[in-house]
Length: 131
Image (cartoon, rainbow, N blue to C red; front, side, top):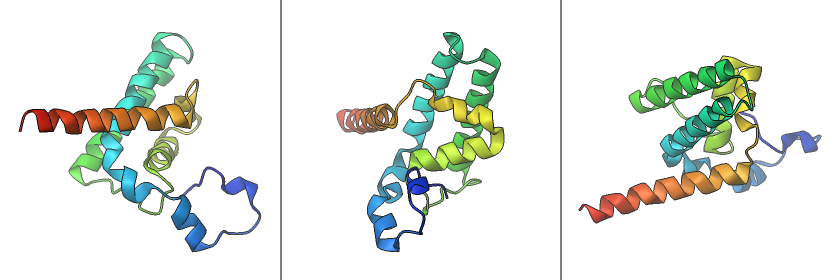
């Protein structure tokens, strides 16, 4: 599985280093928030003309398929991925090629992480409120 920073190194890093940098064991439970946030972002990119609307629609449709496949168990999250964002982005680009890479236009990884945490914990708080 791809690692965001791997290109900076010539040798394979020690397993302990990879384990230290990996958050997939924690953030894999937030796959739904990550995908829904990405769908909203892709929709905005197409609606504003930042990317072509047809590309935006392809990204949204494929993300929706990925979400359904994870929920149904048809697609398993690769626990060797660095994080849930890398896994989903890798799956999207394997299906859509360069179009899938357009998802991160005008969006930083920090923006993405902050959004999924807010969505995840808002959902948890809503469940507590109605218990």
